[in-house]
Length: 317
Image 1 (cartoon, one colour):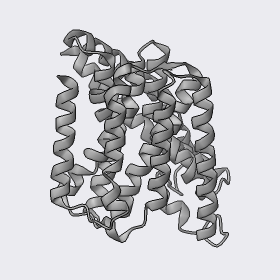
Image 2: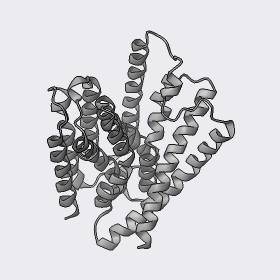
Image 3: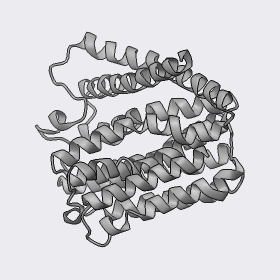
Image 4: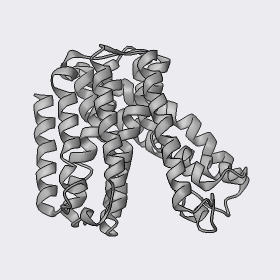
């Protein structure tokens, strides 16, 4: 029982520390005069992915590549099937009225690139440089698009208020406290969660890969699930779909890209035989909503959720 409680504690610390880091970093950057647009494209994006990043880095350093890679592959699969499935059962998402085609094609290209690099057998510094380089190009393009849409204006009066984690009235001591809590909490939470996950894997006689694809992946997908449920209930389908597409792209390029620059991540052959193709198939399931003008109805939500339950049951078996 203690190992499960430790794992839950680690996950809770990770999620809270990630949120604290985003709040502290966003408000520090804005106080230092960094435009809100740049903050949203960099600090918020990386900050919300910090739990996954710390887990993958720690797992890679400690010789548990299955957790490092399973965390990302499992999260991307869960993001489509579970993170979109559950909210769709609560409220119909009118995805047909929003244009997310460009982001979808970029995510799909990142998926194919990731799978191609996986067939090298290891995500090493070469693969890391490629993934991080592609991410830098994508962020640069997103930055130019955002500037174009705002007619060259980097900031407006409402930008700071709408930015995730921004609080114009936050005191300096609170900014520094959030930063400290985030920077201390993330490695502590990662330590607890990864160590607990490896003990659970050993106890049940399953591999680190299985634990990474299920327990760790679902845990680190909880923030995306909470955001998407909230967006669905507020009828903001663009936010819900954009959240999943953006998260998947960052997982592939940023998480594994940065982690493989720190330590090589060996690819379990089972990923090449099954799990990577499930991740790709899940990504392709977005085609009706992105390219064909279909709404994400409750029937679709039930179907996606059942598919994810079947996938987890197969992996655990």
